[in-house]
Length: 245
Image (cartoon, rainbow, N blue to C red):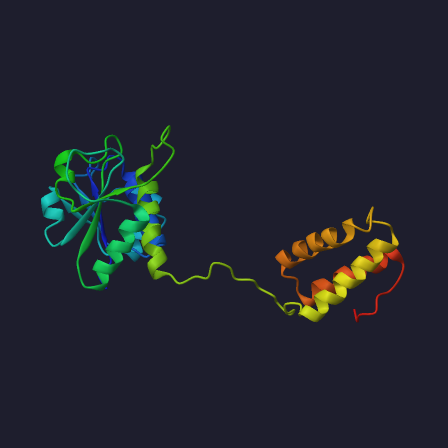
């Protein structure tokens, strides 16, 4: 699969080139091209900001023109924060990366353009793009650092390539509590609450216990946690429960 090329058009600060390389590599991208950087490249400040990213990437290519940088690209995406007077598809970063991923899987060579720090991409640069990418941000303050913009878009790409679960609970040596164990805990808790006059009226008891059960259900307790809670009840009441602890 062809991963997208990141192209920085007229970047001004060497530090942002290094930070861009770091952001790219965080997200599994490694092909970086520069168009007419203001500061000579390679640059020691870029190397410092990359935190070693350049050592793990192919050599960065430097071009005099955007046309040269796009010579082998079939589909070009361009990031822009402003509305343009051009008839081109406009996508949010997530949708654009969905589209790009499908093209990459089919063997297309794609690229994402980012403009310089001061003014972004001009209309001539935008004319090279097939699809525009916009990142919805606070309309009262939407200014992004160049490397931040690269990271946001690259992260949307990485979600297609790095398979990580939304939630990974490490139960260590314990296991999730069974329905029987949680029922025993609820029953004992309800009994002790009633004995200590927690429920102001009998009518309140079912509703309050439902709320308590819902609270504990959200916790997804382990067997060890139910034992610990039994221990807390025993400590507070001076009575040992019937369950093994």
